[in-house]
Image 1 (tube, one colour):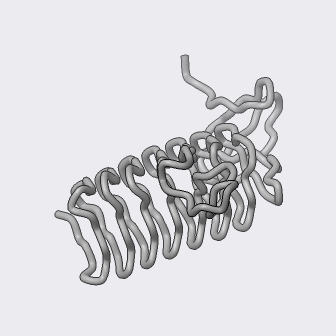
Image 2 (image 1 turned 30 degrees about the vertical axis):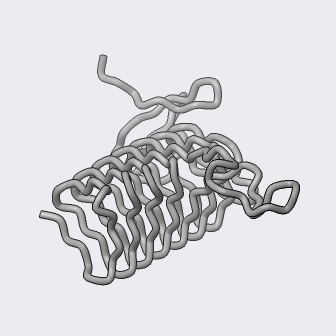
Image 3 (image 1 turned 45 degrees about the vertical axis):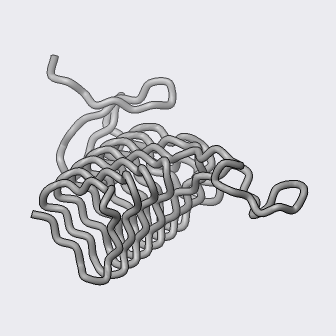
Length: 197
């Protein structure tokens, strides 16, 4: 079952997964695809053809412009903006109003389990890695590795985080999550989870 608030504007061409909720004043555009159990908060915008995985949360007044792709379990905080135009202009060089055919939309891609903090802006085209965290108010202008915590303007990696979102602590030659005990290893400016192989 899908819940759509009476004041929400959901296109008949959108595909909404079972168990999803779309709250007051939200807009979901044509050909958008939402997975199962997604939550779209008050006043949020989901652009034409945006693809979202299962269990995503898009908080109040966030703007997810096409062609963004969100993996499973992605969190988009309040008033986040995912852009889609590298060189934005309202008009062409000769002063004519630009039409959709006058530019090529580029998107933000967000990996499984990643979180984007309140009022952060992700400047397309960028990729936010799986389980990464973008701090509130950050401006992301470059790709973010898996498990990275980035902050600032422009955003820079300041820590590593685990699947629980908690900053990792150094433990010998690796890293450990204080919340779960999971271990991680750093190689070439990237982080990988330890396996039991």
